[in-house]
Image (cartoon, rainbow, N blue to C red):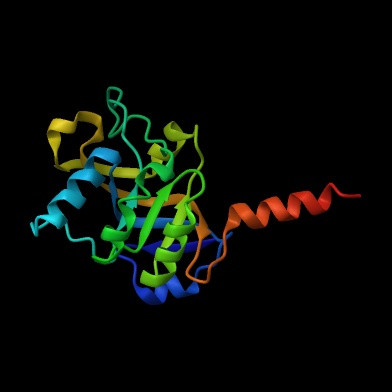
Length: 185
């Protein structure tokens, strides 16, 4: 298990390999499609984003309303491929990590290598369990998006796996190869 603190540095990223299990502590940002679209539109207009992306991690999630006495509701990952068209612009501004579920396009994987960033996954369907790692939460921007607003989460030991590293490795492809070898005989 590898422990990481945000913001992430290039040195942090260089140590990670696909398949590494990690626990993240510090600030991560929760954002889905609408926030990504708004970010890229702002970038294209030359406007400043509501947060600096340098060294940051974005978790592809929209949280459900918190139950009474809780900080957040369920905060499970959403399918990452929906953000693929937005990722290069964000990586060019220093974003170092994304967390979601499911595979990424070849284009995104090449872009992760180019900008020395990683893609991580966390367990889909475990949003209530994952929410226990979130110690503080607040809306940072785009409150009008409701549960899809840009969120700032202070996390302690947020669980994830490295799927795509800066060396071109892909945990999903490696897993498929391993599984097919085990079933050949």
